[in-house]
Image 1 (tube, protein in one colour):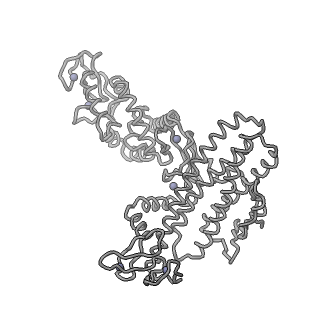
Image 2 (cartoon, rainbow, N blue to C red; image 1 turned 90 degrees about the vertical axis):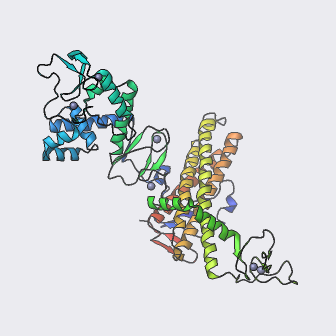
Image 3 (cartoon, rainbow, N blue to C red; image 1 turned 135 degrees about the vertical axis):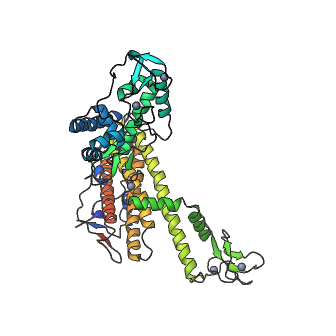
Length: 501
Ligand SMILES: [Zn+2]
Ligand SMILES: [Zn+2]
Ligand SMILES: [Zn+2]
Ligand SMILES: [Zn+2]
Ligand SMILES: [Zn+2]
Ligand SMILES: [Zn+2]
């Protein structure tokens, strides 16, 4: 067992305040500093797929089915599209009743009739124009059409907003044969073909349980997560990190369900308005109507017709002779119910602000990280290795993201679990302290070594590298403890200890 604080978490430039607030000791089993990447549970069980990769996967499934059923790839594609890209569904239906299955998806029982016997020329099934065999189009069945009519038919299908055009059928309503890809390719405009190909891609991803599009606007990559992946946290090639399950931002240590509940809470105007009123008003001790916070003064006069005068802090009646520095009654006169409401509203705002503020701090740290990379490391006038500053910024960004969601964790700790809340607050306080030391030290380092050419580079660097590692380690264990629902954490009077296997 080794204390987190056995390692020096002092601010490199302010060593004297190092242990001032380290009374509470977090004890962990392994004190080995983590690398930055250990912060996020390892997840190599996913692939980022480009459109070409997805097309290849589609092609592979089609080829596979065409081999298994001894049908053409065109037919395999039609079958798969009909059965929502499920290989199993197609084969099951096929082997149960091949004829019925062929009919259902629009494949004729026999190979497509291209040149019906005895046909010297033929008429379009729509406009009745007579055409030579060269000018006629066959729709995978015995029906023939002129190019213009077929083009109009395909165009109508493509513009069908219901998107039911993954299989385009013969214009003859009684027929239902699926048009072959060859015919579609010949007739459709380039725009329609591109549109169709995109629709196929989209339907392939949408029906594939293991693949999801990256939710960042405009991103064309998709992520394939293996079924055995230990965590849903993924990072796209566009550098957007998100939870593969719920597509929200990385939200460890809270679950997707908790994220959903949180979003419902904060976007419910009734909840926020109610909390705001609870925090800014107290009931008049005389008429019980809610009276607004008077601001700087403690003395409040209730509205008409009550006009009761009382002390906002303790709700005692304010007698005419009472001085302005009156000492409040410690039992502040609020009913238990109102006190509870105020505690709950105060928790709401504390958690909301912590969640919001850490996002702002993360964004600004990200900006500083990019600036450090672009401006300072590249144009380093001091000619010393400043990559440790980049590593420190990366750590800060990750920790801010974790800290943001720990506030949501706190919000949902049941109110009657007092010990857990108490312990959580201790651990959160330490996490904030540790992170803030790292944050301010890193900011100071940027000023000292980049803007001025300071001499104590080696000492500073050693300390910041250590502080980065200690912060990473602390957050890693903090998250582990929360994953464990603080189960193995014992809270003593002045010592919180985390036992992590
Ligand atoms: Zn026609
Ligand atoms: Zn037909
Ligand atoms: Zn992306
Ligand atoms: Zn999620
Ligand atoms: Zn009143
Ligand atoms: Zn008072």
